[in-house]
Length: 226
Image 1 (tube, rainbow, N blue to C red):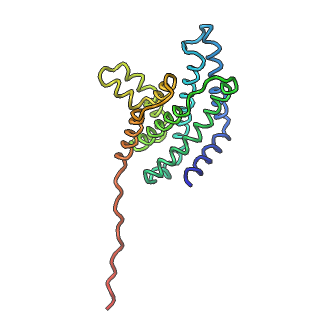
Image 2: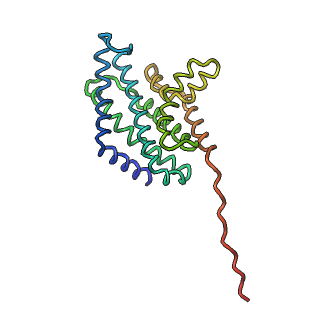
Image 3: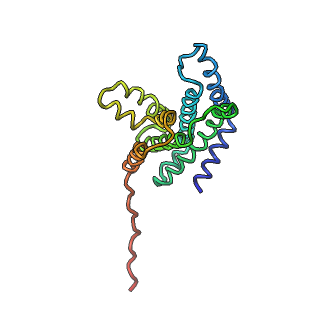
């Protein structure tokens, strides 16, 4: 029940904000702009139009999760006391609603033009990875207003930096790189169970960071009347 109510609340709030519509227009125009200018050498992208679409899809999902975390920060008083499972459902429902709206803006025109879109399993795993990382960030002592920026840094910037770090770089990238599933979707039509390990690891980290529940205190024992 909390999942449906959260998704409805997020979608309603976003669709009433002109800034969200402006963001959706920018995301929707990003792919045709880059795809049309790249053959003329007017952009820094060297990818084909389908490859550019994968990058736009990742950016739209990252933006959706960032919006969901920003909105959840306004309900910190409600989200933080929730049990871990209900908090995870809340975060997943909020991010699903925001991400679905931005993905629709990003993939609508390519679908009409019959451009190959990212496979559903790659989108789903990217979404779950970002949701698991968001849940870990909620458990950490980070100011609520900065969690969206921490998510963007952890899922996008940190893996790029990690590739230049010897030894630990590949480990960091494999744990935090949420876009790796879309990269895998370009070259493979299926997945192996091993690609689920980062998601499972982040979920386990969120569970380990959950503070212990204080035992309920029993009321004072009344003396039996003689």
